[in-house]
Length: 530
Image 1: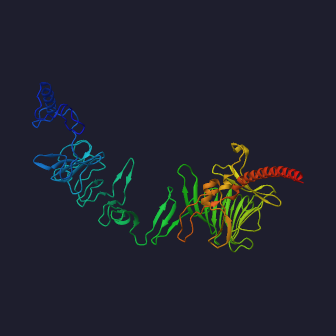
Image 2: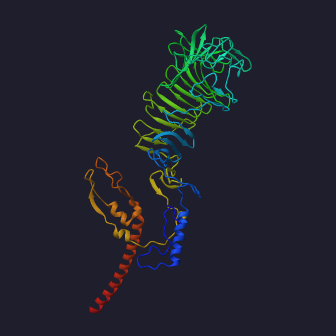
Image 3: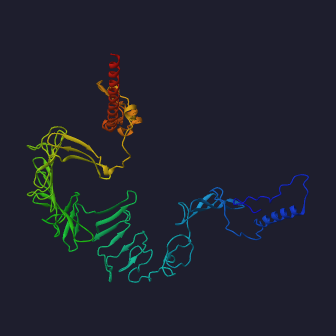
């Protein structure tokens, strides 16, 4: 039989045999042919034949690679993980193979011998750049004549010759000669640039008459880029494209923004959008710090008042302790939110919402009272309707549908819940009185203050009238109180009470009729006995 997916061979049917079995030609030929076929399918140690399917190997480990040599079993290749293979020598990782390429680990050397390779950098046997072995672009060694007029210095020279650039000097510093000038895209160095100066790490210095003026440097340990000057008391200056001074940074670390034609009222800072010429600026206007986007502005004056002004509204912080969020201008308020501070004469510590006529519509006062439609506090929440009969509070479900309201008329308040016929499917006239029959009323005392009361226990009521019960939790807080106590809406029992009352009325009427009949019969008997 063929081997299974794990490579395990199973003898064909009729095997194994036991002592005393008769060896027949049909059994022997079938079994030996199957064994011979599987031997043929095995690899020959002498290399005869070859694999007819992909040759899959064990992953192996660093110490025992999946592919190794008979005389050196710790040298070869092993699979370290998904998409990662290593070449190892004597149990040491030498070269990593991944989908991203090859990696020579730290401490190991990649040596490229002499030779010609187009468009690559190559090294000689000593792994050093020299005049006879260096960068190559066209298959030949880079020489002084390759970039005549641009890079025509002598490799290894201490200083460049006139008009020359040396790629590597004896001290490892690249230098541009002070007289070097190139045409075309242009290069006019003047005082010169020094790279990798000994005083800084990988620096660019600017010189004037041999004296360092400024530098750009980075530090590989602290990971920073530094731009500065080494002149005592020196100042960094930033100029615009037209040569106009824009800002200075002096030796004390003070950054000063100078005059700019795009910034209003003189000195300031402008930020431009990349897609158009709209700018956002910060500037000083007659002692007031001004933030502007070209149309709307925000002002912070010397007294600490903050005002945000825009064509569609404003925010203003007033000196007498309140802030206004407006829908118009300071002279035509529109719809506003007033936040009054503690120093305000009449509305201290209040938040007021006003309409376009500047009439207060809602107030949150200093005592935490919320007043809607009124300015008179009569409790924690006071709601005054505009017209008697109008709802004072609406209740909406998650989808935004009105399901209840608090309605006020001239003398009373109605707490209304949704009961629209069009929202219901009629299941018939109710006659079942089991809710009232099975509801138990208890006399009890509240644990919080010991006051006596009468009512149901919510957990018991849930078994009889689930729709009347708010299901709480059994979680107890650290102070011993329940996290979400169970609750009951007694109004849910009203329909059941109505059904029960109608049944009682019907039963009373029936009993009264029976009593009247018995009275007549009793009177008749009395007359007969008289």
